[in-house]
Length: 248
Length: 248
Image (cartoon, rainbow over all chains, first blue to last red; front, top):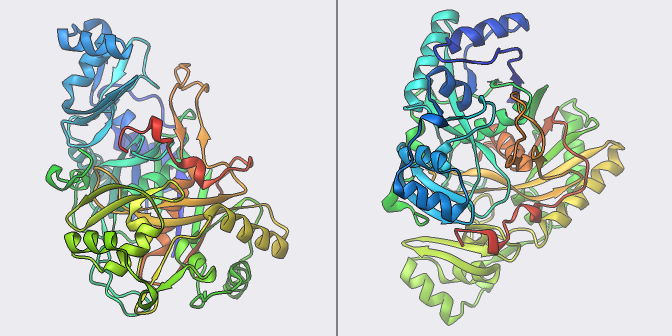
C-alpha cells in the first residue's frame, strides 16, 4: 500500500457563506486533479469556521468580571478570554500564559481553539459549532459534485501533554471510521493483539499537515490510498470519556 | 508539494545482531525501489530493539517487592512490572490496569514501551537503550550503502491524554530537525505567527503508521517528498521539560 498526500492549491481567502465543497472542486479542477473513490479530503478548521461565520470581532465583546480576572493574571486580552470561555466546558490547566480547556465539544486544547492567525485584524476565529456536522456537509457537497466515495476530516493544530511542538488533530469526521482497530487480530507470532486501536484520522490529519504548512495558504489536502473503514464515525468519538481519563 | 509514503515489504523477522540498514537496503532492492536524496526512513522500534538485543526472557526476571505490590494491585505479571520499572524514571499515573510512566529517556507512555506483541512467547521487548543513537547508526549504515542524504526516525505506538486511540510517535531521530518552526513567519494576513512550532517528526511517524499496519509485518516505511530541515536534531528534543509541563 502506498499513500499519496497532496495539497489543493489556489483556494481563495474564504469568507462567510462561501461554499467550501465548490471551492475545493474548482481548485482541484484548475490543478488538473479529480477526486477519486476513497480519497480523504482534509480541511483546515480555519476555513470552515470562516465560511460558517464563526468569527468574532473583538470590539463587540464585553468581557465578564471572571474574564477580566483571568486575563489580568495571564496577561491576555480580556475580550479574547471572554470568547474562549464562551466555548469552554471546563478549564483543565491555567499557568503562566497557557490556558488549556475542554471545549464544548469535549476536545482538550489551548484557548478552546480560538485563534487570530489568518483572520482580519481585530477578529478571532472559533472552532466550528459542530465539526462533525461541518464535515458531513462538506462531504455531501463534494459527493454531489463528484459522485465519488469520500471521507472528510476537519483538523486543527494543537499542542500535547508531555511533548513539545504541535501536530494536527482531527476534530470533525464524516464517511469513515476514526479508528483502525487491531484488537483481536493476531500478530506475526500468532499472539492476539489486545490493545491496539489506532486513531487513524489523527494520523491522517498529521500526514496532511506536512504538505499544508501554516503560512502558505494550502487549507485543503487530499490523502489518497488509505483504505479506511467506511462505517460512519465522528470526531467526537475521539474524545476520551472523562471517567476513563487520567489527565482531566 | 506532494508526499509519497510506502512500506518496505519483505523484511524478514529480525533477531539480535541483525544489520537493519542492510535488511532495509536489500528489501527495497527486491521491490525495485531505491532510496533517494531527502527520503525519510521510518523504522518501528520493535525491530530496532530486537536487533539490539533489547529483549528480556520473563523467566529470568526476579521481581522486587515493589513490583509484586504494583502487579497485584493492577492484576499484571510481576515480572513484566519489574521490567517496566527498570526502564522507568518516574510513575506518572497508575489506575486500573493502566501504568503511565516517564521512561529513562524522558518520554511519557504506557508500560515504558515494554511490549509483548511480535516477539516470542515468554519474552518482552524494551525500548532501545538510546533511540537517537540507534537512529544515527541506521542512518550511517544506509548512507554507506546508498550515498544519499537521508533522515531516519524510530517510532513507537502510544496512547495520548484526553484522546482515544493510539498513534505513532517519534522516539529517535537522525539527520533532520524534529520541528518545523513557523514562529516569526507571517500568515496570509501579514500577522506574525507567535506559537506554531510543528513536531514534524511526530507527524511523519503518524503518516508512516498508516501504511504500516500492526499485524502485517511492514516495520519500515519510506516518506518521500517532505522537505525537512537538515539541522541535526534528536527525538529527545521532543520531551517537554518537566518544569514547563502542566501534566506531569
